[in-house]
Each structure stands twice: as structure tokens, then as C-alpha cells.
Length: 48
Image (tube, rainbow, N blue to C red; front, side, top):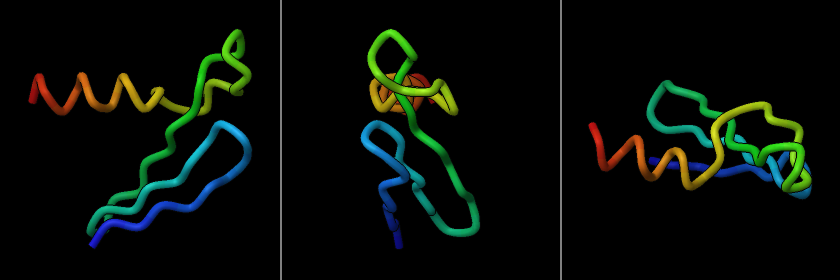
């Protein structure tokens, strides 16, 4: 089961099994750089 919680305008907390991931945008895109961007997660998944 995957769950997604919006933290603020650009950040999300994603839970998958017992793992918790934070996704955020870079500061120049309006985020706070608290984690990889959604695109970076997609690229990491394709490379795994």
C-alpha cells in the first residue's frame, strides 16, 4: 500500500511498506530541498 501526504505546496511524504520518503523541489523551483524531486525519484526508479 502506498500513501501520499502533502506537506506543503511542493513537498510530499510518501509511505511504501515500512519506508518513508520525502519528495521536494529545489529552492529555485519554490521548494525547500528536503528530498529528491519527483522527477529524480522517477529517474532513480528507472535506474534501479
